[in-house]
Image 1 (cartoon, rainbow, N blue to C red):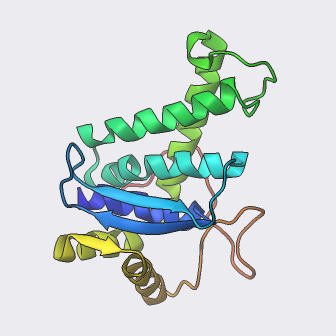
Image 2 (image 1 turned 90 degrees about the vertical axis):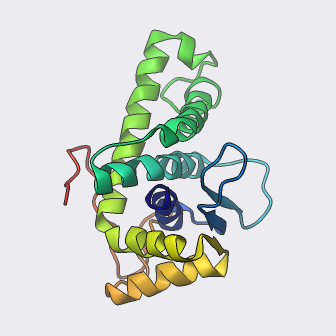
Amino acid sequence: IATHEAGHATVAHLVGVGRKLEVLSVIKRKAALGLLAHSDIEERYMKTKTELEALVRISFGGMAAEELFFGDTSSGVGGDLETATAIVSQMVGQMGMGGSLRSYDAMADKEGRAVIESKLAEAKADATEMLDAHRHVVEALRDALLDRKELIADEITDVIEKAEAAAGNIDLRVRAGGAPEGLRAPEVSNGPARRG
């Protein structure tokens, strides 16, 4: 569970520009065995395509971390897949963000389902690539969760910043419009993830 949640937090840190990491926990709450709570830094009522794509990548962070570290996934990814699918379905069928300007129930349409599947696969590959390049961050967050069970706000970013500094990285977050000045974001491919 700690690795799964650390995966979400790492991807959220990397792609979640304009988002704040609020709680990272492995304390059981109702049906959830762990959680990452994150929100917009400023209250907003609409999201851009880039922001929605970031939320989908964040949803895949747990699954990607499980696959990278354990070579398999657990039933814990079910809710994440549901969330990612709902976001992409709306993007494709209702928001004109999937190549078609007509509004339709994308899941009921064969072509729409193919577009959704493609976008989900791309987001998962992106999350996997990011986590593979930032294993040290996932490990640091996982270890902190195993030790403390819950991290709040600055405690999350402190662990991330220390892990990045120890790895010699300054700030490798992927930002809208490109990487931070002087740094290049990791290349993302649809090829198989490297296992280590």
